[in-house]
Length: 310
Length: 253
Image 1: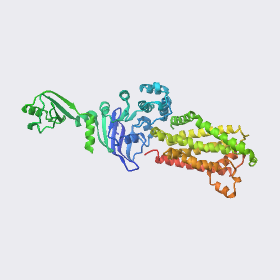
Image 2: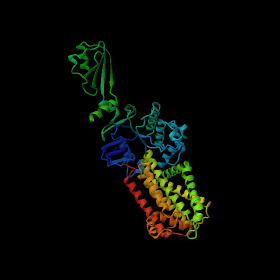
Image 3: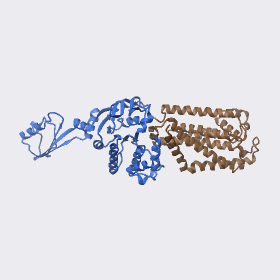
Image 4: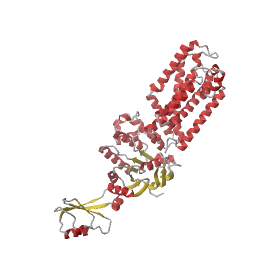
């Protein structure tokens, strides 16, 4: 196990009874105290991976350890460290918020601690709903309760499977504030999300999974640096009728009759071509009054990776 | 052992009973009272005593067994099926809890409810008929053994069921007829010889017979045969549950 790892996944595969292979020989190390974003299209295997680590799905092959403990042989040790916020919103409709959160704490082997439950409910703005039945809550509130249940037993590792799906902006911001606070207190967080801008904002490392295979794991900044393209946008004085011949070798985009010319390049290459482009523009007599550059987002990188895999 | 988890499941299930008192306690008490009124008072007054015991008193053990079987199965099957239906089973499966502890929580709660109900029905019966218990310890042993065994059976049905219809099929189409035909309302000796033999294939006969013996020392089969048959059924349920947890049948992909 890596010295810094809290979760170690080696050679993990899962084939369901129907023959569908959800995971193919996945190796992954999650570092203690980090926020790790697991990205992938629908059906890529994200939830299967999470469910195996949490004990909900049986692995077909491979080994998973949590803080050095095997998830099957030492399941009590591993599961007591983990909190899970599932993708769906399963709730006990007739239970009160207080009871359902207290139930989760007991289930994970912790003695009753009303002070802790109160603190969790307050941190999620659920305190005034503590006596409400689950069926009376909105979708956003139910999502908060699921997070409260996952935090009720003070986990050291928190899995958030699409935690912000279908929640409003306010809750989303509250949630990420809470997640940062948990990270600061030493909790390791693994999240999946379809809102890749969230992963871009929150995660320190990113893993991309597609069709059951982990195709990339990297520090987010390095990933964006390595795989991200950069765009140089030139705001011209005069609209162009077409790209002059001496500029045809450059990767240029322009909208006919517009005053913008866009050059896409890899910022990590030794020769980006920017100097040559500017010289060629001067030779062609094309003048501009402003320039700006834009780094491609994690979402664009993700789409490129997944599309390339296909 | 994760006793906090066992307590959490147990209390959660018991709380559900107290939330639904009308359905869980009152309804079975009323229906049992109706049996006493119809079979004990109205029809029973025209039936001569069965082997020295008034008909009203004779049917008490059978009625208690009828409620114990149906309620044990119903409580335990619903207890485990509902989390499967709503999806909250994810929490049970991801908790640091062993299969034995899961069983203790769910089956323990279901059996407790049945025992409470059995005691309430016995108390209700005293309002209608003079009741005597010749062997209280054996009566309690049968009460507990039957509640636990059929709660386990209900747990298995709850795991097996993938819809509300399946949840009801075995209790309604198998258990209820077997209970009615298991000597709850009559002595097996009242049947023609051929049907006396056939009825011995009904496992409920052994439960009712043993339970009735603890009240009046009247039995259709030997007490030890009753214990033996009930224990065999208990062992069968335990083996099935062990297999379910070992394979993850209907629980884990």
